[in-house]
Amino acid sequence: MTATIVSEVTLRSSSGQRKMPVMGLGTAPEATSTVTTKDAVLEAIKQGYRHFDAASAYGVEQSVGEAIAEALKLGLVASRDELFVTSKLWVTDNHAQTIVSALQKSLRTLQLEYLDLFLIHWPIATKPGKVVYPIEVSEIVEFDVKGVWGSMEECQRLGLTKAIGVSNFSIKKLEKLLSFATIPPAVNQVEVNLGWQQQQLREFCKEKGITVTAFSPLRKGASRGANLVMDNDVLKELADAHGKTVAQICLRWLYEQGLTFVVKSYDKERMKQNLGIFDWSLTEEDYKKISEIHQERLIKGPTKPLLDDLWDEE
Image (cartoon, rainbow, N blue to C red; front, side, top):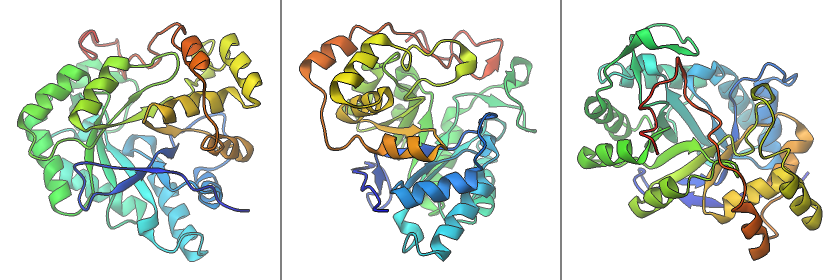
């Protein structure tokens, strides 16, 4: 099997101008999956995936680490440096004094010396403790973004990660962060899909040299009702016209927008299809139809009840 070569973008504020493959494999746990995370990551490496998106809250860091160790042992990759590994800081550790040790713990679990990218998972801090999802609002404490970011910068200076960034940050929250950051965030990982295109946020990030990584690029989650993207008749028509799948149309659009994205599929065949987006293009007519898709945010927030000011009304 010949592995697909995935194109890369350079992360502006990373140590040594680290390159990030535009497509990554997401590893957030899914009750319905029959394939283990370890097997999925190994299969993905065989197919050509080099970017893996984890988080301490997902409980998958050990499996991802085992898969990487195995891939190195089998010679599927020549060295650790060929892989791009992201993990995320959970809200319980979102405090200036706990960040370095939280990252060191993630590294031990992953059996890695360094991460390529370390993200603040949500712009929220809670009392230290176990991972509970959804987050109880009563657990929330003040998020000291300045102190926290200072510790994130320290992680990069110590060489524990090549780049640092954020996730689920609005323009307003990014502006505040940029006002005092010595090392600006390399990445903002947010929901972007054809049903939530995030035009303004993307333009802001582009202007500031922040790479946007899209999560939920196919707007999945059958448990959340109808899928505005995968079940969209217009997109089904476009897919038929190109001889592609709806997922491929979605991912090609993200790629043409200059975005990076993490796509979650542990199915061998779909993993392969998702890589098949680099050798064809969407037309102007396609773009016109895509611009008319109804827009609505899928992931409203991690708390119960939802917070009013999480997205700053953007």
